[in-house]
Image 1: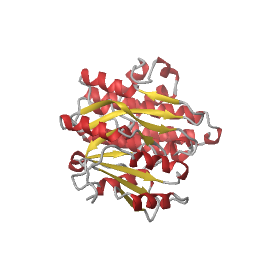
Image 2: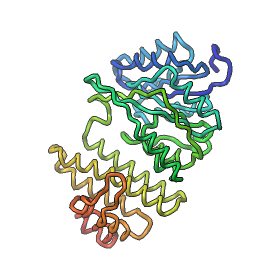
Image 3: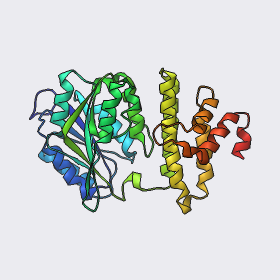
Length: 342
C-alpha cells in the first residue's frame, strides 16, 4: 500500500515502457500531476535499450506512487500490461502508453463517474497529436457508444478501440481472467472484445482527455509482415472468442463482418507496398482459413458481400474487391480449400 496515501487505491495505471525516452518524462509528469490521490502507477520497463529504465527508477525514487518492474526479456506491450494487471491493487485499472500523456484531472473524473453507480467501465475521449503540432479531437467513438446503448446494441460491438481512454473494474478482469494476448499489434482490440462482452455498464465522461501521439516509430506505424500477421492473429482470436461465447446470431454476424472489414483495409495497405508483393497471397490464404471458422451457413457471407452489406466500411464496392472473391471462395470451403491453397 502506498505509505503516503494509506487509503484504498482507487485506480491503478499500467504503463508499458519501451524505448520512448524522448516522450517518457512528459507522460510520467502527467501521471505525477493527477488530482486523484488514491492512485498508483505501475511502470513495466520492457528491456528498453535507451534511458527509459533509469527515468522510471528516478520517478519511483521521488514518488512512491510509482512502481517499476524491469522485464528480463522483451515481452512486448500486451504481456507487459498483463504483469501490471497481476499486481494492481486499484478498484479500477487504466492503461497509458509511455509516449502519450493525460490531463491532470483525467483519473479523478473517470473514477468519480464510475463510482456513481458502480459502473464496470468509465470512458472519456482522445485527442490525436501530430508531429506538425496539430491536435485533433476524436469524439466519434464516444458518440457511437452513446447512440448504440440507446439502441440496445451490445457494448462489445461499440467500444472496440481506444482502450487507454477508459478505466476497467479490476474485479471484472479477475473474475473472467481477461488479459491481453501475446501479439505484436491489435492486442488492445482483443482485450476490449473480451472485457466488453462481460461488462454490464459504462459511464461516458466529458471534459478531460487522453493525448494520443502519432509518430513514425510507433509499432502501428511500422508496416511490415509482422504487423499484418498480428492483424490476422487478432482476427483469429476474435473468431475463437465469438465461437465459444454465446450471443445472438445477428450480433455474431455483425462482429464477424466488422472484423473482416479490418482485414480488407489492411489488405489494401499491403497492395500499395511493393516490398510486400510476395506476401499478398499468403495474407489472403491465412484470412480464408480464419474465415472458414465462421460457424453458420457460409452462404450468408457471400450474400452479405454480393448485396453490399452496409456495416462499417463495407459497401457495394466490395463486389469488385478482394472481399467478393474471398467470400465466394468461402462457399467452396472446406471441400475446395486444397485448390485455393495451391
